Length: 178
Image (cartoon, rainbow, N blue to C red):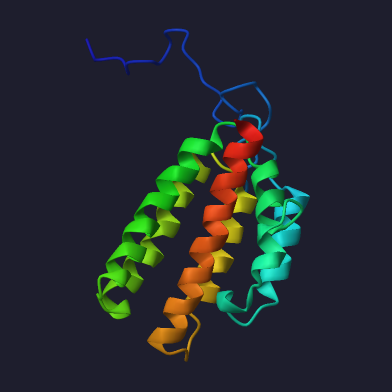
């Protein structure tokens, strides 16, 4: 008498080519449908495109992102309601980097921590908690902070502008979502 495989022949079957939330066919090349968050948001894509054209984040003007109709407000309006806590989780380690820079730690010691914020955000995208377009925007912003050939002082200045931009996104997210 041999052992039968656990599920074989017991009426259990699972179609793994389907989305587990709604039976929609699943494309292996893209993420699952997001919970209330559009996958590619035109507002965020537009902001990413504008930032991509900059040489570094320090070239971003405050008036371009701080106004109620600026980049930060556009991004915040586009984020889903579940994104508030995920935004804070992404933001808090960056605030730690900023405070350590103010205490005089060298940029070289902290640059790796900035790069590690991207996988944390990718995890949130994988769990469908933030849109992929926001992840791509933040990835572009970080690349504009750590531009090849820039001095540590230029990178610190770009990081400072990135933090101002991110603070504005967090503030507008709270303003719009309550």
